[in-house]
Amino acid sequence: MPEQPVATDPWTGFLDWFETIIIPDWGGLISLVPILLILGVVGPGLTALAMYWLYHRLTARRGRVRIGEPEPVHARLGEDGTPDFPPNVPYCPHHLLIFPASARNCEVDGEELYVRCPVDDMTRVASQDLCRVCGTRYQLGAALSPVVVRRSGRPPEGGAAIA
Image (cartoon, rainbow, N blue to C red; front, side, top):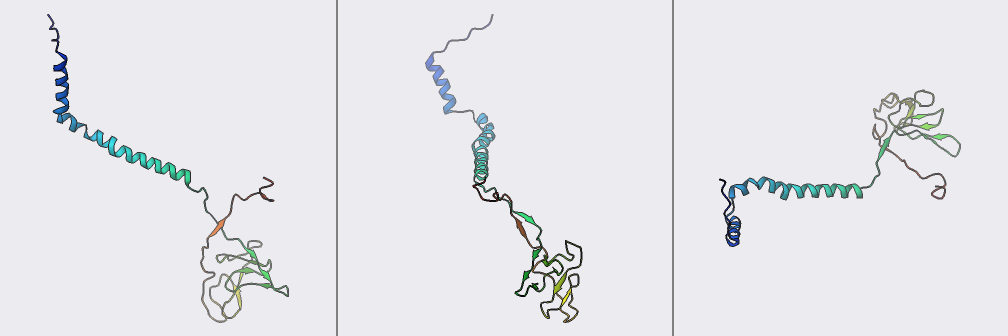
């Protein structure tokens, strides 16, 4: 015959339960330490990191710099109507365009560009890095790879009133 459970009085049941709090099962508690570390340390750290990422995404500016190639510009004309080409910069005398320092041929017709020597004002082709008159060896422009920032997202012509 099966044994029937012995009824315990409530006071003894309370003391048995209270004994587990006063004298806990240390083996069981130590086995919970990794879970408590994950929930108590790693969890709040990951939450703080996610909240910072969200804050940064909401407050960061959306503008991006787009780098483009330098474009040729028109040469300034003097009072007498002759073009004024700066020294040590490639230019096309036929189209009156001043090109970036890395250019060697005209974009319009493919002809060789010319450069004015900064020392003796003589002209030479841009592909030569040595002045044939004074013997000066130099490199065109301040840098071979200038940074040009392209603008995008401009308002329509006429301003915001048209939009």
